[in-house]
Length: 306
Image 1 (cartoon, helix red, strand yellow):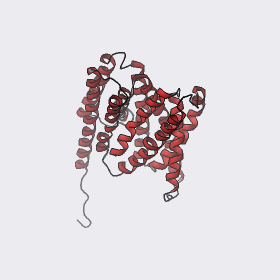
Image 2 (image 1 turned 120 degrees about the horizontal axis):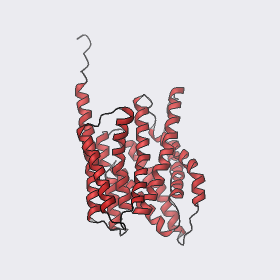
Image 3 (image 1 turned 90 degrees about the horizontal axis):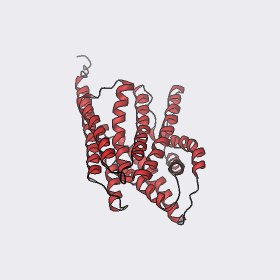
Image 4 (image 1 turned 90 degrees about the vertical axis):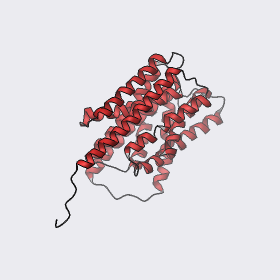
């Protein structure tokens, strides 16, 4: 999980470098990421044992999950890369990863009736305050409102994927995560192809070798490798722990942005970032406490014969 979080944090850095050395757009970059990730994940699927055939109902749910995840991935990735292009790696990543868990909590409350609780409500309020500080106090040169808006759109795509997965899982529609994501990348690539082609699939650059290496890196490390590691870790790590560990993504992105890409962080940007990250941490611990309370309320099974 730690390696996956850090790897995801480098995706925006690679995108930022690509924008600097070529005219590739966020939609084309998202398309090539889907294509590269699809090819590599298909290889991973070919090397493992084939699962048992699913029932017709399970196949229908799996198809719904693949289509929904594919559309969500296309929105999530494209809006994120556009946000990085407009407002920088640090702010784009922090807003996307900070707003995502908050949107998930609100969506779960509105669509599935899940309780947020006092801790969750405080976390949502803290996240909104962090966003306000970033937008209003960041300064036009460092924080662009349109970039922040695109980061929120990206977070909404991420939240939609998570809520769909949770809804199908709650109703007994759980599916093989690696296989589902592989085919979701195929859906995302097909959906992105027309608009990415209009934007320009082949970038113009004076450094073609660097562009190819960066595209290969985006497909291999923060896509195929990171998703494979994430699925392996998420299967055995508590959800609240996952939420905290995934904070490594915006933190690593911010470090790379300042140390290697020369981005400036104002005092307001740092304050807004800390508010967002604190809110996500608080939300994770609030969910952990709620889960613990729910487990204690379930009566113990009566032993046979007792």
